[in-house]
Length: 386
Image 1 (cartoon, rainbow, N blue to C red):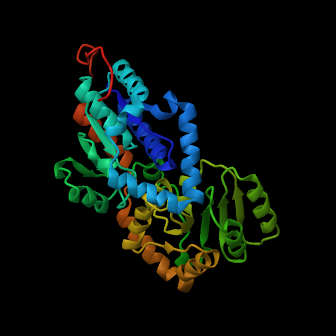
Image 2 (cartoon, rainbow, N blue to C red):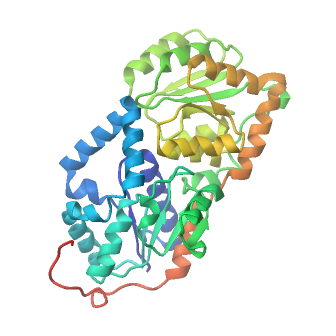
Image 3 (tube, rainbow, N blue to C red):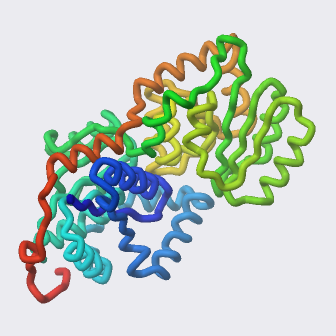
């Protein structure tokens, strides 16, 4: 049986979401146990990784200008591979995992790992086919393409053009979509939203992320729309959940206030619009669900491209104040949802809900039955970068 390693990291949910979806698709088409997900950064140096993630989330939520400057520095200064020496323990551990698993291929949903794999291929003779699964759109950091690999899977044509312009070989670029949960493809016939043209209530989903600004005020304005069905997903913020629940008490139109939930795919496929920040996973899941998006927050750097994708295709819009969110939705639902129907039609042209399956099938077909034995992976006994 073929074995595929999937490398991920917990810096933004998009990387892990893509990795989980790929793992499910590989197991579905290659058999249980085909995919093995690994997070080298969190596994090898959990304390350092926890601190780094805390700094990352504080920067994107509270110091966006600082994060924007750092993201631009990473893109411009290109610190890797020169700084790979800082990750020697992670590379040593990854080498051990690759020797033990003898995989047919490796898929990375986080760009740092391509540099580690390239080093292991050159210095340690671990020449295993590797692919970068790009989780950003348009505003793609150079780290995604500077390290060589056997191919890149891109979420859309606009992102593929960025890599072409950067000099990546066109034959290695494959536009297959962002690997969302297979449920988006498997349940599309079962789950659907009411037809606005038939006088049904608009259904609005508000996904509230940590660091979201004006969440309670936006909720208050939405609750005043008595002919809309509303669903709030507040994550683990129990205080906010209680306040919204109290505010919604006695409302005639249906309203549901959820904490953490694994129902997001189902909710996206059954609501007419979603309000959320332009995170990689959320944006791509909304596209896969044909659910127009109202972007209420854009983190500088990687999320700018996610919103830019929606803007270029005229899907939903950007509204960074509670009042602007309300006005954009009112405009979309006016006249029996005339403008919303345009959004809905255009988002369908972008959707690739079977992306995870398409990527898994491509990799399995190309490397089916090719497993690497320990003898093939023999390498020098010394280890060190530089």
